[in-house]
Each structure stands twice: as structure tokens, then as C-alpha cells.
Amino acid sequence: SAYDVDRTSGANPIRQKLENLNDAGSLYGPIIYDKAPIVMRQLERMLGEETFRGGIREYLARFAFGNAAWTDLIEILDRQTDEDLAGWSRAWVDEPGRPAIATRLKLNGSTIDTLGFDQSDGRGRSLLWNQRLQIALGYESGARITSLRMNAPHVDVANVRGLPAPRYVLPNGEGIGYGLFRLDDLSKQFFLDHLPETGDGVTRATAWLTLWDGMLEGDVPPRPLAELMLRALPLEREEQNVQRILTYLARTYWGFIDDASRLALAPRMEETLRKGIRESPGTSMKSAYFIAFRRTATTPAGLAYLERVWRKQELIPGLTFAEADYIAMAQDLALRNVRGTDAILTEQLGNIVNPDRRSRFAFTIPALSPDESTRDSFFAGLSNIENRRHEPWVLDGLSFLNHPLRRKHAERYIEPSLKLLPDIQRTGDIFFPTRWTQSVLDGHNSPTAAQTVAAFLAAQKDLPPRLRQVVEQSADSLFRAAKIVR
Image (cartoon, rainbow, N blue to C red; front, top):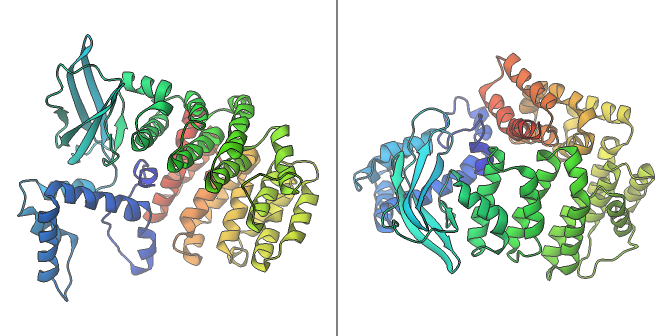
């Protein structure tokens, strides 16, 4: 989650300046909630548990019942180590972004000649991110883990010269590092060919994340990555990995491959997901596969199956559905403009017992309509603050308006949505501007949509810095997808 912010041009540091208490809520997000704990863990690993604990004790005792800052803690800990903690803190805490760490592997026939890693700062600040890495060298018998202190632009791994050539090198072998890890060509091809049967669950999870990052950077083509996911799903037994692969698969399917490739992939994808629904041993895994199927089904056969499940004409052994599930099925059927969409929405509205869910569903029906003018009217109404009172309802509606299947028509909503952001920030919840912008942009992947956002950012010179960050962070996937698809 932190990567989704840190890889963007609008990334914020962990330690931020607060000019006005009214803006306090805008400081929070994945960098605070997800990156900061990783950085604290790295600090503890760098110092050692006892040294770290002793420094925390001194910090708490010295500043008991008073005010203290992060820099006070760093000053205390800095005296107890030979590491440059001030420089470490500047890179990790005071500056946004993450290091790019590339593998440098040179073989001498069938053995390793040199293995090294090069780190760089994509933002041109020449920062160095000091961290400990666990490098995994993959062999047929398993992975060999070697530790590396990544504290310079170029670091070579000691004591590996002469070892047999590995099948792969995974720079973040045990998942404890933080950065954009670029694979060497040998390792990248190995994972594209053999990831499903590689290593343990953590190794596979880290490899998936590394390949996903590589795809976003243009190093890994999206279509082969999607096909790898389809091969991997029937073989993967770690539920967290299944969930992660399904998430990546849906994002690739809707955002990073062109429409022709998506249509060609659809039958095989639906077959794989339905097999997962049938054969998964536990309820949660079956549910994960069904949700993925529901969100991606597009073929006539797939939609007919989904409608039968919604109508309770076809049961899924081992899986039961609640009211919210039937609501979601009806909404997905409506987004596909299946025959009788209006009747499906009306019937579903009548089936809802919970009054809050019924009101929420009724609010979003115009956003689900097959009629473009009805959807336009719904969007126009969101400029009225009274129609934004129930923010989760609004976010549902925006997501439906900008669904990938409707994104060509929905491009007209992008600029006015962004122009509403100052009012959204002034009148809404602290997280509403980010969620509003993501709901508008996440369904888009065209160069035209990307240009609309870029033109907005260029024209809005007076946009508050926090809102500019929100747009830059939320639009990053769109910018990358437009470039990759083109």
C-alpha cells in the first residue's frame, strides 16, 4: 500500500509540516500507516533490539511529561551507533520516495563471478537509503539466503564468487526490504516461466510484488504477466498469495492490457476463476474467487452464470451469500448492460431488507443506468453538497460511472470532478478528496484521460499543495496504464 503512494510524483514523506490544524487529516495515508512501521522495524534491525530498546527508554525518561520531536529520538540513538542516523532519517523519514535497487549478476560459465546491487534515487537527489537486505539465491534444492548491508550506491555481495549459478536472484528474499527492486534478466525470465512452483510462500509473495512493480515500470509486459497469474492460481495454496494474485490479475485485466487482448483473455480467465470457485477447499478462498469472477466477468456464458447465481437458480456448494453479495451481483450485471438491466435493479431494490442498504442502492441506481443521459444527470447532481452527504454512496456512484466498461463516455467527468476538489475538501471527511479522486480515475487507462489530468495540473497553479498531491497520487496508475497500453 505504501508503494502505491511512494512510486508517484505526489509522494509525501513520513515526517510532514503542518501549517494549519484544519489540514491535519490530510497528512494521513499509507505512508503514515504502512511505510512508517517498516522504517521503525528497519531502525531496530540496524541498531539491534537491546540498543534500540535502551534508546527508547532514555527518550521516554528524558522527555516525560513534556514535548519531544522525532529528531530528539534520532539524536539519542545516534550516540549509540556508528551508523549515520541523521542521514538515514533524512532519506527514510524526511524525504518522499524509495530507492531503486538493481541486481548486477556476472557469471563465469556455470558459476558466479560477481553479484552486486546498485541503488539510485529516481528523483535526482542522490539520496542513499541505508537498509539491511536478505538476498535469496534460488537453486533446485531451495533458496540460499545471504545478508547484505545496502549502505552505498554500489555494494557487492561477499563470499559468493565461485558458487553455482543460481536459477534466480531475489534482492528482497524475505520481504523485509523496501524499494523498487529490479531483477536481472535471468531472474526475471525464470520467474515468468517458473514462479508458481518456486520456493515457499514468502518467496513467491515477494517475487509477485517484484514482478508487479516491474510491470508498472515497463520492465515486464502485462499480457505475459496476466497469463502467468492464470497458470499460478490453480497451484497456489497460500491464501494471502491467492488474494494478492487475484488483485493484480483484476488490475492488469482492466487497466494494463488493451481491449482486444482483454477480450481474448476473458474466456480463459473466467474458466480459471470458476475452477477456483469449485475446487477451493475453504469458504474464504471460494469467496475470493467468486468476487474476482463477479468483478471481471464479461462473456455471455460468464454473465449468464452470474445471473443464475443472483437469481438463486444455481447454488455454489460451500458458499453462501448475504444481502450485500446479492446487491453487488446486481450492480455488476447492470454495469454489463445485460438484458433486462432495469428490471434487475428494480427487483434487487425490492429484495433489500436492510433500510440503509436499500437507501444506498436506490441512490446509486441512476449511476448504474444503461442510459448515458441518466448517468450524466447523476454526476451533475454531485456538485450539490446535499447530494454528497452520504460519502460512501457517492463513491459507489462515481465508481459505477467510471467503470472500465464505461470509461470512454466517462472521460467527460474527469475535469469537472477534479475542479470540485477544493469544495470536496472543504465540506467532506478528511479522506474524501483522495477517495473521490481515486473513484473517478481508477477505471481509466486512455492517453486522452491521462492528458486531461495532466492539463488540469498544469492549469491549476493555485491548487493547494495537499490537493495537488492527492491528484498526483491518484493519477499515477492512470499515467502508467496509458503509457503501457499505448
